Image (tube, rainbow, N blue to C red):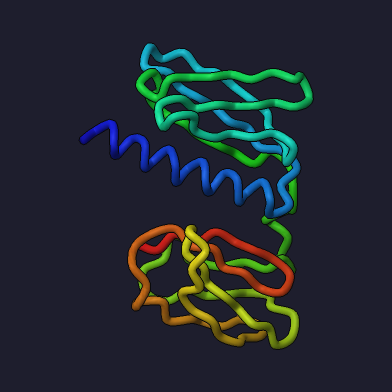
Length: 162
């Protein structure tokens, strides 16, 4: 049972990581913490890949060095990903959502004109669609707990619903 939970968690993390790379990040720092406490660090770009092989091995391919690393899932204690370059999230005029994580009402800030906002589940299902402008609060109490993508005409942001 624990292995199944770990596999699902890693799958969701890798899915989110893949989407993060496609959302304008130029590189992502991946840290694999092994059961013995050792850490392995990888800097990944859009050209690199991370995936499962036979649902038992995490594969990391770094194209720049033409290297492939294979790590058994049973040996992994923790996997973390951090964007190291990309858009400046602290820009006061940049599109933003808050609070994140969110419970019932999501506020979208700095929308330029009237835009269609779509909220997608990580499996690609459209969960909610609406139009908004400027700063607007959106009721998302009907969504289940989980990770969602909030897509506007100009950006895609990750939202965690609690």
